[in-house]
Amino acid sequence: MVRGGRVRVRTGTRWVAYCGGGVLLASLTALSPAQATTPIAPQAPVPETTLNWEPCEDLDPVEDENLECATLTVPMVHEPGVAHAVAETVEIALSRVPATGTAEHTMLVNPGGPGSAGRQWASHTHLRMPEELRETYDVVAFDPRGMGASTPGITCDPDFFTPVRKDTVPADAEEEQALRADAEAYADACAKDAGPLLDHMRTEDTAHDMDAMRVALGRDQVDYLGYSYGSYLGTVYSSLYPDSVRAVVLDSVVDPDSPWYESNLAQSRALDRAAHNFFDWVARHDDTYGLGADGDAVADAYYDLRSRLGEEPAEDTVGPTELEGAVIVVAYSGGTWPAVASALSAQIRDGDSAPLVELHENYGDDAGSDPGYGGYLAVQCTDAEWPKDWKTWNADARRVHEDAPFMGWHNIWYNAPCATWGGESAPWFQVGDGPYEHPAYDGDVLLVHATDDGATSVEGAHSLRERLPGSSLVIEDGGITHGVALTGNACVDEAVVDYLREGVLPERGAEGPDLTCDARPEPEPRSTQSAPHTPVDRLGPIGLEYPGESAVTVE
Image 1 (spheres, helix red, strand yellow):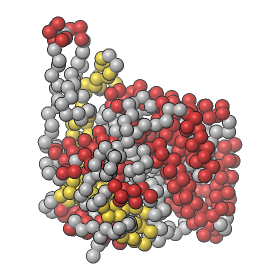
Image 2 (cartoon, helix red, strand yellow):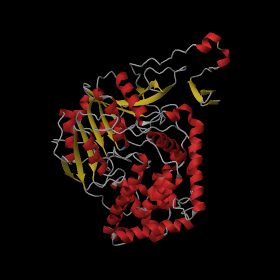
Image 3 (cartoon, helix red, strand yellow):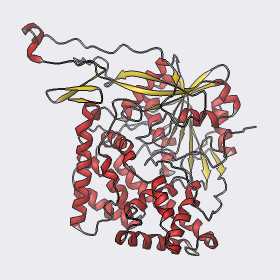
Image 4 (cartoon, helix red, strand yellow):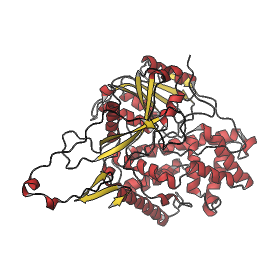
């Protein structure tokens, strides 16, 4: 079978990928008797030790004119000593902004996800560093395996997102069964195209890729900055390769004690709390939006709109599920609150659907969401075990929806393909002292978290602090945005820069937090919608700056 210039040959129950212009035909019957009985020596790929950096022609826009790109070939399976008849590889797409002076350090950056194409974050991060760090840091970002420009990629079914989609809150058993069928069909579509990659998309695989990047970059050690899911990736990487890291900053921390199924149930409750913060903010600006003078009234107006969209979608485009997919951004960034409030107000007060449709186009899912969603599932569904009995999912969904209706059922269906996922799952990579299989990294780590982050609850930061004996925790008290470091909070940024520049952490106390910073001011209301097209990753930041902010200034 030939797709996109790649030839796949079926051998038994495995797919073998051969990249390039030639076609390799495999036939076991063509082997001589001696060959058939003699083990085939592994053809391991030769490790790359140099990278060919060139202009990033496929990235648009490029924030920094110095951004450059390269690719790195790594084994699909990182198992030393394991023989593979054919050396299967993947190509990792990298980006770099070189230091403006002498590069003393290299920082790897991951924006979260999983499913995020991360190469833009080299320039995002470099531009937000103070000049003294830009002078001494090469900043390197990457599209993790299966994502973005890395190949092979995960694709599933772009038509899955065609509006108007089924309501995520099933009215009866028949509607629930229809939603289950959609989730299973999407999982089947992912498995059909992904081949052997589907079994090698775990966080551990990407952590191994990262150390191959370090080697190719010519560094004995690298620094690491990871947001959201990137915090878990950094935790796993530093545990597997403790001698390969110099400084580690983990922001908006994933709870190390909660595998993805349990983590998503907890996330639904955190999203609901964040939504009520938004409803309260809208109520405080009732003179602008007119949706109610208290948060409960605004929430009632929102849920009433959701019900009416179930009967008559806005411009045959935005139904209840599309509404949820757009407004979830309020739990990720306070910077989105004015745009979302304006769109809701226009629809509810004036019957004007155009802003709501625009909000969906800016923030909601569409056909272009397919690679990111497929990549998200490919990691989450194999990173840990998931319940196979739908009774468990159903009972948990009903319980969470009762407590947290904002995204309770929505989050269940977002992850439901994991119930029938084709890739092999592994036990959760849990770090820490005691009975855990993976020892925690015991070097210095800086943890950063906002108390009212809706995507990753603050309890996860405290849990990871307990697991990492060399860590210090910085809390943005009252912070409402997912992703805090290098985004303009002077107190937080000073702690980050001091750590990267001098290796100095806030003094660790008996209990966390070790440094508490006041949150930045909440956003000002606007009567008109203004929002960029910014795709939302379920565990990744949608943007790490307020309008007009750029480089961090630290005295």
